[in-house]
Image 1 (tube, rainbow, N blue to C red):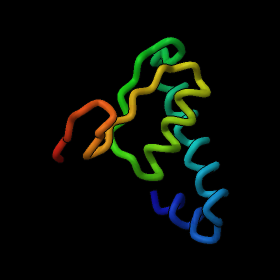
Image 2: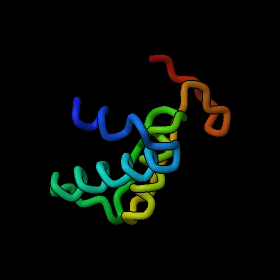
Image 3: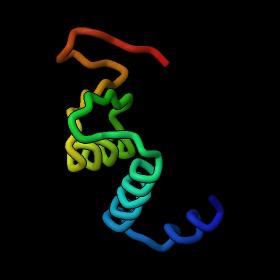
Image 4: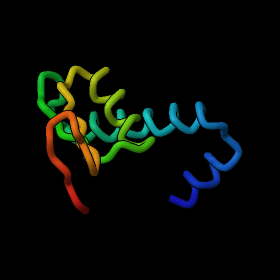
Length: 79
């Protein structure tokens, strides 16, 4: 983790997002979890969630995004 912090320290926002996406892609592939065609729930609506949605969608998943207050589905989640 310390090496990641050192790596991203001098990156701009776009570079950090690309780096995060690469780490997520690698983790998903290494896990052996079949993502293509799967329905995946992503909790949150910040930058990390946006990156996860982009990566998982690119990998063929159907992504459901749920934030703390998601009026589109008529529910509010608390965590």
